Length: 274
Image (tube, rainbow, N blue to C red; front, side):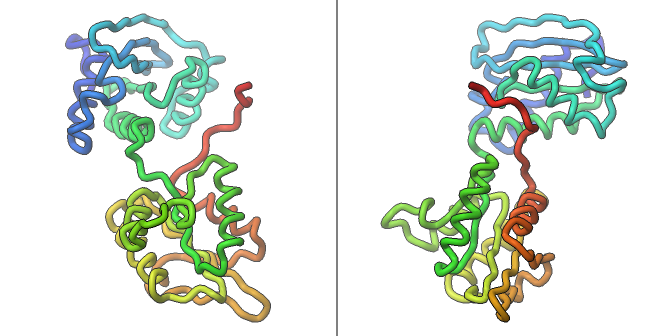
C-alpha cells in the first residue's frame, strides 16, 4: 500500500515491486525493468494518483516531474473504475509513447496497488522474454497443411505459435522438444480430425497439456477443436473430456474459437508505424 508522508510514491511502488519480483525472478532483479533505473511522471485524476514510470536502466540518474490534474479528453472517461482501467491505461501508454519495459500505475484513494503490481509483473515478464506466450499446435502429421494455415493466420494477428517443424531443429530429442514446447506455451490447441489418434506422441501431448494447465491455471488454455470430413468426425481423447470442446462448421469459426479461448490478446487497433 502506498502511504502519504513517507517516501515518494514512485519509491514506495518500486520498493513493493522489488519484493514482488524477487518472489519469482530473484536472479533477474538487478536487470529488471524500472528496478534497474527509472524516470517518473506523477499526475492525478478524479481522486486517483497516477504514476508513470519509464525504464532507463541507469540507477545513477533519474528525473521526476509533476503533470498536475489530467484532463478528461486525454483520459477518455469521467472517472476511473476497475472496469475502465485497461482502456485508460492503454490511452496513457499511447499518449506518452511507453514501451513494454515502462508502466502506468493507478493508485486509488486508499493507496491500494496490489492488482497494479501483478499487472506490472506480467507486462515486464513479457518485456524480459520470460513469459510463456506461445500457442502449441497439436495435430496429426497428415493434418500439417491445415494446421500450418492456422499458424500463419494466428501469427499475422500477432500471436506466436509452436509447430514442431519450425520449433525443433534437426537432432532435437522429440520428447525433450515437446516438453520445452509446452513450457514455453500459454495454450495448447488440439486439432482433432478423423486422422487424430490418442497414441504415441499425441498421447504425450495431451498429458503435457494437462500438466501445464495444473501448473499455470488460468494462464494456460486447453482448446480442443473437432473437425468433420464427410461422414467421419474426429474423436476427442478421453483425458480431454473434462474440458469443453468445439465443433466448428468452418475454419473461420475455428479461428474465432481459438482467439476467444486464449489467455492472451493482441493490442488495441491503432495506426501502423511507417
